[in-house]
Length: 523
Image (cartoon, rainbow, N blue to C red; front, side, top):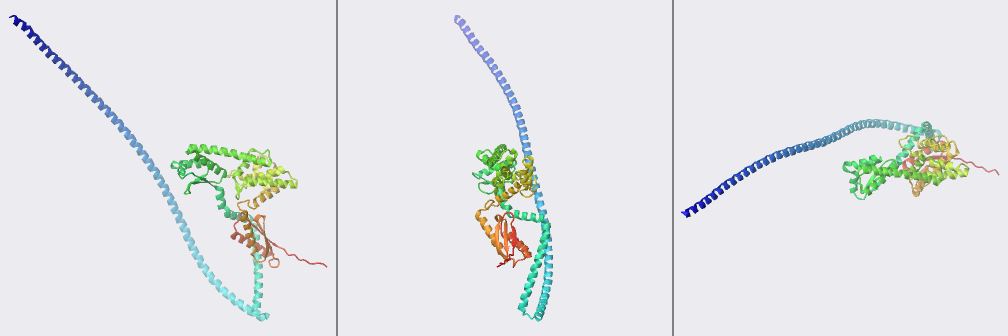
């Protein structure tokens, strides 16, 4: 019984433990289920928020893609419009060229018809002339027969006599006609002078323009051409706008051509381009900076050249603007002769002549140095360079004698002092001396020899002398064979042959001298 009493508490304890374990297990399971439920809720909330963010990102990317599409569409439309505009311009140019070609074709067709009609007329006139010539031969034969019968001369003697008479009469009539034409031409002397000047320009313009309008810059490599041109040509456009010259980039290997009529600007462009290539930085802003700096430095150099010329000639108190223009002569030329060297040479010659005849030496040198200063003014100002220099001298308070000498050295105004005549003479001496202007001494001598030989080939010419450095040819004729009227015709014929067969700068005066000397001795 006592043992049963002891077992009951044990059993109750075991049952309590079992019951406690079961309750604990139930409570822990309930808590775990609650946590799982909360975790699932939080997971669903995270998923919802992630979905919202994904939609926002998707919407934002869609907007960005749409904006990018619109931007590329606009760029494409702009490029298409530019190409369309270029095509329209090209079509317009092609249309204009086609119209010009049609017009030229019409002109050519019209001229062909005119030539055909003229050829027909010439054929008719040729027939008439031939018939008249045949009649004239018949009359001549009849006349010869009559003359033989009347004069008792043989046919050959009469023929010789008639030919001599006809030749003399024809020469006299031709000389009279030429003299009349020349007298009429003298009334239009200005037009004739302009024609001569234009002919001289035509002979020398191409060579002279190449020498005085083009400079060449050597490149280190062909790749430099692309850098000079720049993207879509922006560098070359900026360079030409800054310098005022044309930059020609062609197939010439490792060289670029600088073309412009202003030597000063061309020199600025050449120096600036060389500096840009050495520096390596070639873009529009750098180009403008280098060109401006180079131009400023060259202006200072020009002023220094003018001051050096004044010091060399011992000339003082000249206006700074005139000093600058004197320095600019370094970048000017006349028939290949450097203008500054020419002006200094003229000044020295003027000083020498002034000393010999007792005139003011300094004033003569001053006038000689400034006589061509009008060639250095802005090319947009029109007028002869002598008158432009005359106006500059008066504007900058030069002595009236100096100003007059400048304006009168090409006889544009009347000379008022002996110094003006000295300046004119010295200018001619400096420009006319052998080798001064784009011609070597050897070529100069050959040209003079050919000139004398050409004039000496005419009938009746006794001697020929080339003077004034080939600017004039003196022709001495035989007075028994050439009379006064034929002398005029001979001068014209010689001038025409010189124009056709010789190349020469400027113009050549042909002077025919006919002199008869009679001598007798009193014994």
